[in-house]
Image 1 (tube, helix red, strand yellow):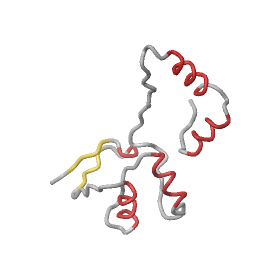
Image 2 (cartoon, rainbow, N blue to C red):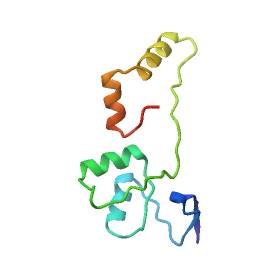
Image 3 (cartoon, rainbow, N blue to C red):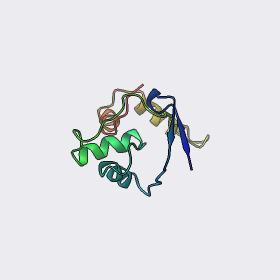
Image 4 (tube, helix red, strand yellow):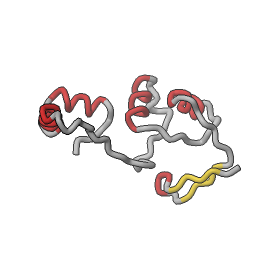
Length: 110
């Protein structure tokens, strides 16, 4: 059975002869490190955390181009203007704690 992934790091279409579905991102990384797969796709925040936690800087290559990107949006009940104002104030401020959270998880502030 073949599985296709499009635009993996600008390579066009990559054909995978065997796909291994992992049950957890940490296990997917372990499978990669054992040489059982050639690559894995992980969220940026997860890989940044695991590389740091497991001291893997010299054992894995992180492609500079992401496979996919997405944005997370705040979902707030319409009647909670107080929450909307609070989150807007923090998200678009130079709040030190907020910026540390963004940095911790490897996200860039837009």
